[in-house]
Image 1 (cartoon, rainbow, N blue to C red):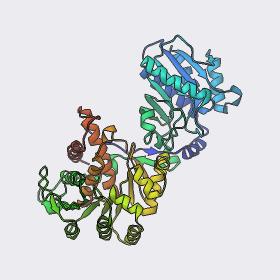
Image 2: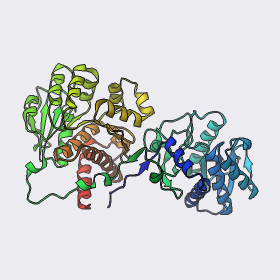
Image 3: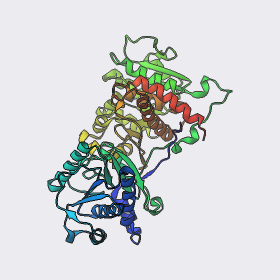
Image 4: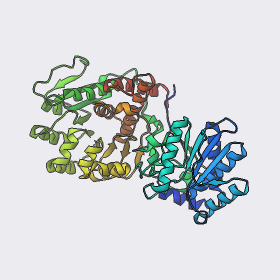
Length: 503
């Protein structure tokens, strides 16, 4: 099974408007409507089937009119509900409306009763929505969602589900819950992060015969294996454990030793030659009975080992002892990852912030892996603010701390201090379980310890983490009840497959 993927460009609405202006001489609405009709036909092959089309007051409504015209020509029974005013339609949408009417179509004020729908098309609002969906439009959105459930039929959104912010993945009032979304010109970040995946269903891109990346710089990219494939190298036969680095994990305070064990086990199974754990619990065991290959140390002894990468935070706890150890760790000249309690200490302690500010003179990279609440603490904001624009929050963290950042969650965001950002498309709700963040830390530190560049290592680990969970779910092990330990085994399998598939 080939699990290689390619990174795809993503655009915010403002950049897409630039592209549309540069391509103003091309029939983009006609192409969009035709592409939508083609997908609709593949979703609803029964000739004469009843199709409900909701057309809105802007260009998204124009796309819907074009699609409806093509579907009528293909002998579908099409009912178009127009939620707008003809006299206020933009020029291209008005032309699409008139052509639909001239070809024998008609529009309705409301959804007709007594029909069972084979397909529903949402063309109410596209990517330019700036206000919450409510009133009549909100009623149509709610009705479409309910009818799709009642009739067990596909619900196809044009460009973006109405009520979803295509830039951020934030909901704007009531929103369409589509089974399929056909998005035009290029992908949009909001379809892939935040609430996007729950409302978009299966996303396909119709480029409309444009090369978006030639016309404008992408706002972001998805994570694909092509971004790090050059480092997926088979191991030399003439090698030894010292060839693959020494990873360290600092954490495991009282009652939280398991977090450090999970990170260490993940690092070991992703190929670190040696893995050391520095456990803060004074009563910590001296051996991991599940993974005896792990080398357990006192925290101070861990920091004296010749590590090639260090992760701090899994189960670390707070207090003066943890803070002092973290200050010492942050002063080391080696790739450093901060997660969990290390991030909470960083947010709360100006002493630690000063140490990290001084560390900027160090050539070794710093990586932060917060979940939304940890990110909010680091930014001095509410979690709701972080989730309202996950891309912007990750970029702000990367700039403020001069670090590579992964903002975890649905559609994890990787951001760099120079303003680049990436959206991950692997993963599922099975990862909403204790310990999975510790596993991610272990995967990242394993690649750093083996000499991977920091950005490529972070991208690979984030993508691999989600892919491992996806494959475990496909095998029947979740998403409900998927455990962090199962993700570790899945990650090892997926990574070795990547390497075996070659460059």
